[in-house]
Length: 263
Image 1 (cartoon, helix red, strand yellow):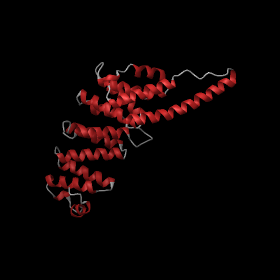
Image 2: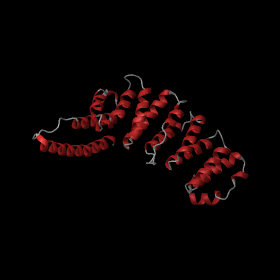
Image 3: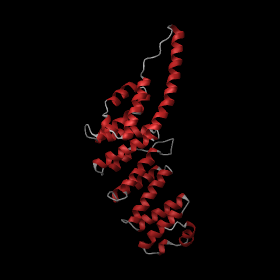
Image 4: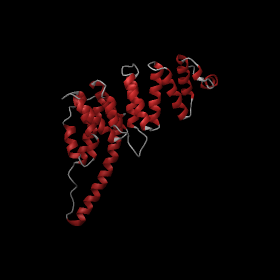
């Protein structure tokens, strides 16, 4: 607690927690895990703390740390197992809100580039939550995913938030924003632009208003009529080259504008 990890390691490193009373051993196991740099030993210590002091703040702290560590290493199966246990045992904890927001950020930046996490598992874990909490967390996940251009997760979360939002509500407008924001640079640009135009800007917060404005500007640039020019094959090739160049410039501008809007 005093920040002297080296001294703490000397005093706690060789203690056999199995020889201690559970109420002491759990605390020591948690402290040992926090001092451990090896990932396997770290998780082993957290598991011991969970087992020795179930239903206590020691178990909760160990579960939170274990879940986030599994997210950091993209170990999906134990991550979902730990997360489900946390929700079952500590749904009303004072620390739950901050923890769940950390989890949403971890899912948005999941490091396994070859395989996205099975987000259907998140739906299952959320089933026991109140609707307003689920809606809020899905929106948080949509925002975080959008900021790091994780479009698959952003769309998933925005759709879920939209399903849970009341008609005409602030949450509905924000969910629609994150559902269609990135689609303005896709083959569905025209439809996405219409959806963004229908959003009630006055119901968005300042940051989301900036994102909406940026999205509408990008949509306008992309959907402008093609350049004029000479007719025939040569003219068509020239038009294609102009459009390609324009698209590349717009992508650069879009990235800059969206980045500035998020700050």
